[in-house]
Image 1: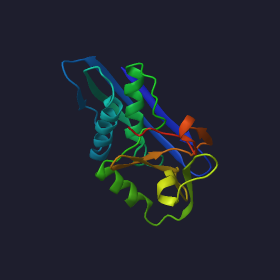
Image 2: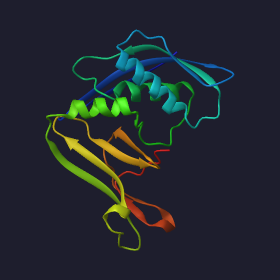
Image 3: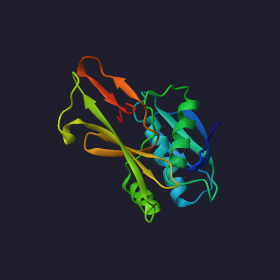
Image 4: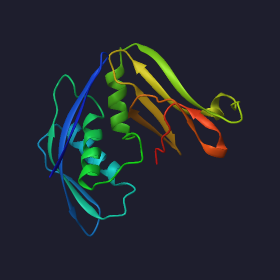
Length: 190
C-alpha cells in the first residue's frame, strides 16, 4: 500500500488530501475505489488514478483504499491530485508532467461553483517568444494562471481540444530550443 499526503499552506490558501492506493499486476488497466468517502471525492480519486495511468504501458489494477479530507483545507482537485501522486509513487514513476490537471466537466463545474463570489485578483500568462518577438495574442498564448482571493492559483493549460485546469504556480522563463522560448512553467498536458 502507498499513501500520498497533499499538504500545502500559504498565506492565501491551504490544501489537504491523503490517499492510499494498492497497485497490482493485471491483464488490463483497472481502477476501483473501495474507500469510504463522499461521492465527489470517490469520483476525484477514480479520475486521478486514470490520469496517472494514461501514458503508462503497464496493465495494472489500482485500488483506492483510503481517502482522508477535511472540511476546511480540501477543495476541488485535491483528492484527484493526491491519488495521481500515490499511483505514481506506487509504480515508482518519475512524472514528467509538472501538474496533475483535470478537464472532467463535473470537476470543472464544481471548481467554477467554488470560485463564485471570489474576487479575481490577477491573471498571469505564459507566451511563446521566438527571436525576441511574439505572435499576436491568441497565437502566442501558451498557459494562463488565475489568482482568486483566498485560493490556490489555477493554471489553464491547452491540450488539443481540451482545456486542463491544474492547481499550480507559474514558473519563470524557459527555453524551447530552436522553437523559441516561453514565460511561465512549461507543461505537456498530454
